[in-house]
Image (tube, rainbow over all chains, first blue to last red; front, side, top):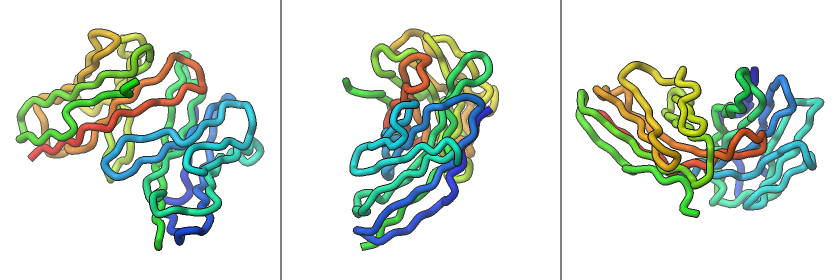
Length: 116
Length: 115
């Protein structure tokens, strides 16, 4: 079985300050992990992914995430928030499931609010 | 590549009517997923296909919901009869086959309103 927990439903930051969106996962096997972003009235867009290569993964728009196996975490960070970063962010784990499938499991999402 | 294409973008219908949502996955992708997103329940997996075959429909809420994938480039999600509680945004996503590292590619969704 696999699961993912996004520890904050809302995160509020000021423009220009760092962003930290927290994600913890559980998986029976070494999974792949993803972060997606969803802007209002849009579909989900892939930000970055981890697939057992480098533990620090860089994505689009200056975001990065670090895979920490010992902590079962995959937190998303950005050094300096921009107003356009305001959106919903989803952490996703994709690991082996029963029956030989690799169905992804989505977190409940974290709403990032950026103040001027 | 045009990405995953969903139609219509918006659908407003009256309770009891049939609703059909359409999806064209990215060419060459072997997996197709249908999700429903609401404020209350977040993103829910309804059903997924592998090579046009439905693999798991345990997320389909009721018999009123059905999904088909007649070929590799087209899928439909049908609700008959529709009810106000079906109002949500429905997303279709596709991915390459079974590799763990294959991300899902999402369409822009269909916003369904049932009055």
